[in-house]
Length: 149
Image 1 (cartoon, one colour):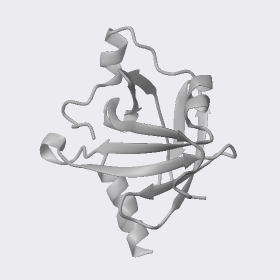
Image 2 (cartoon, one colour; image 1 turned 90 degrees about the vertical axis):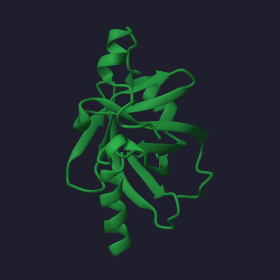
Image 3 (spheres, rainbow, N blue to C red; image 1 turned 180 degrees about the vertical axis):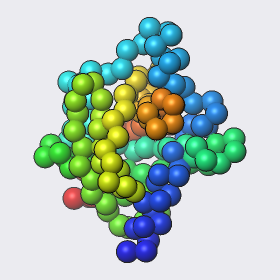
């Protein structure tokens, strides 16, 4: 239980992009880039495992990051395992209004953020941090190759 609490706190604190240089929703909007729509988000995530890196927003310079795999099930559940851990955590999600909404592993809130295509990668933007796009989806694979379920 203690490991879960530590991992949950770390997941909130550790948001592979540097927080200082991470793109933001405002920058995408200035370039005329639109976020992925709800149908695109469903096609990208549901039934797939995403490998994610999140920049640490609290560290000066944002040099460190946390990595995890997340399998998005069709039933509204996401299964998450942090790199180096054997524990799988479950969280609820919804896709609505062109945003991916996820129940936090740390508090009882639901956070909704936009996802943008940036070059060949996808980035998730977090409204808690002034719309910074701190999550980088480094790889997406059909199914649950990590056996999170």
